[in-house]
Length: 429
Ligand SMILES: Cc1ncc(COP(=O)(O)O)c(C=O)c1O
Picture 1: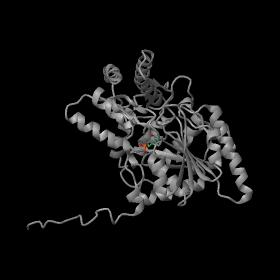
Picture 2: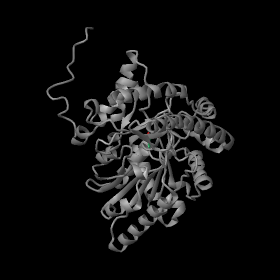
Picture 3: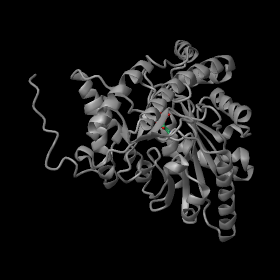
Picture 4: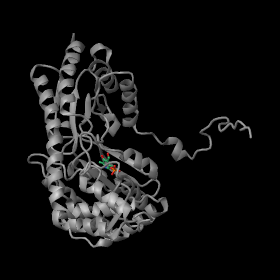
């Protein structure tokens, strides 16, 4: 039978969408990445430091995770997982929190999802009524989008290069009185810096003091969403700490976001978890259940085995951190040398995660008036793909960029740095 042509569009194709969906902005980073892919397809050589992901050629997942997943699938772990996650994995996460983070929680405080994103979404949805205030520092990753999705009113608190783009309790304090949720991340995407223990402690104390103030007034609590997906990736003296370990009284108000995406370079395996007060975690489990945002069952089983395998973890972690640090140091040393040679750049020493903050001060040169113009110049003239801090909510043409190293080789970096230096010199001519 002949197929009849069907016209799926009529009039304004977006007129039927809910205003939330109409107002939703796609990922700026993925847009830049698509531009880079098009250039690469056309034959350009590009050192692609844009996407916060790993290349499986540079950083394959742990063999134990791969083998464990295949084994679990073959053993018939192929049906629905429990809505709060496979018990063995929840227990392994609980034990990990106890032994590595010094936080003792019951297994009912752990929920598993298909990566960390659904955990963040579920936490926002479980706590936020339309119009509620969410406070978050900028630059930070995607809070603006979760604020939009949940109908919250976002208060973005700008942080400075001098503080490593990290928030301080002093900066946050004036904004928390009206807030329902404070969303923090350390080690920080995009800056690659880590909150110092003293600051984490001050933030924990602030959380306790604010909730003590609210209790007699019958007001809803202030919660802290503590995104620590990069916590196993720190360098040198930088040390990951949590408000709960330092100020145990704040435990009823903290929801942790965590998972395997970054610590095990397993972004496509999709296993994440949330840990927090039981009532909040229970609500998150129900939300995640209706969305069906579970991690696949076989991956959960394999992740549980991996978390219990301390030898494999130690070996993999050491190798991953070595590889990331070598790349970050190459970039950091390269930009520091350029700065010493009088070029208008600076970089913040890497402390954690897979990122480096670099400032390229070319505003006013060759007609460049925006960070995006500098980004394009670096891409076109040096084959160097970076993301402006505006993609992380920090407004202003500051010249700051995020460089992400999980998808490039050391050689690509070595080859790109002279191209960047030459392009900078040309911009100043
Ligand atoms: C700070 C932060 N939190 C959460 C996520 C999401 O991780 P997942 O891939 O597990 O959803 C990312 C991913 O880039 C991230 O940078």
